[in-house]
Image (cartoon, rainbow, N blue to C red; front, side, top):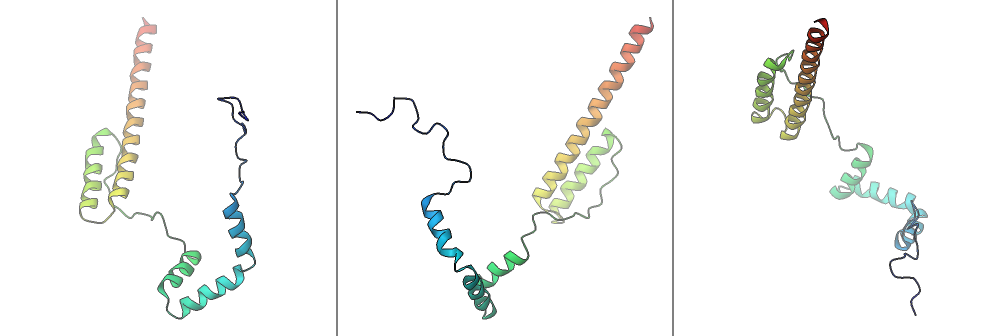
Length: 137
């Protein structure tokens, strides 16, 4: 005898958002009463030279920085003709190790978006010119 009809879930709403599984709940309950003691122990071990405990404590105090400001001199980009020089500057900076390949990729993506913006502005300008020519006759 089947509990549910085939193809029909016994829990159509699924697990509620934020609901923890039983193992996680039990672990949290055990740790809640010991958080202060565990933190103190980690700090003591870090002070004694335990590199893993030290890293754990420092990562909580000073989170890993995901991005950094770039101080990269690129030629001014005022139009499409300036883009190849700017891209060359990005590639040289990556090759020289001044910026990471990921940073170079992000800068290249920004320059590509700028190029698309220039292209759209040019198309709009041309359409407006053609419309004015057509309606003016």
